Length: 238
Image 1 (tube, rainbow, N blue to C red):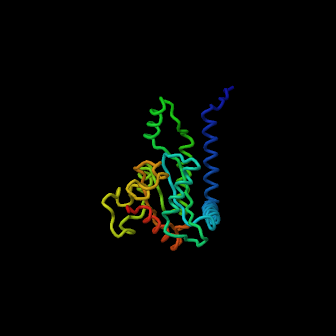
Image 2: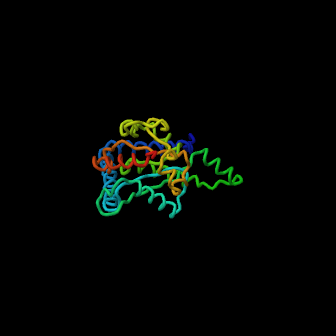
Image 3: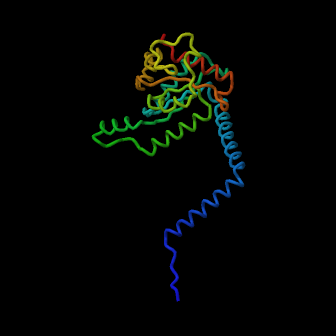
């Protein structure tokens, strides 16, 4: 009588993988439009939630992303400076208020420098760093903010996406000290030079403006015009 061979473990795993792929293919075939629609609704709800949150809370949003970690008092100091720079009370509630959103993200080089500065023991939580970058990416997609203060690493990370506004399109004359056609070093501005709270940031921090998005507050023509006006006030050298 011929011996029956037992299936090897590799065959079982292959069958299980094939079954999963067949299920996935079947699910996508029958539910791809539901999946697309569900993702769109989720994104729309996220934008609406942020709009509701910000409707009565601030005039504008300015976002920082870089290695500096703001303490509460430092964040409030930076916000006060941005409030002062903002040309007017856009929502007319009697108070100028900028929501200052912050994400702390280190580059690989910055993490190495941090380790060298701390006797080989880095202080950066790699998982937290990656999560902050993910949150920053998600936030940028909402279109809730048009003005960004970025480390050179983050600037180089987002610039190829093509969603930054050229300085020449919003300025009468692009200053000679401009970093490139999209950004100006924060240290070249009078706001930085006259504000100790902002001097906590590295001098190579870059200020840039995004184009209006199809979603979020930047899609509102009036809000975007206010963002442009405030951006020009921030980058002023006088």
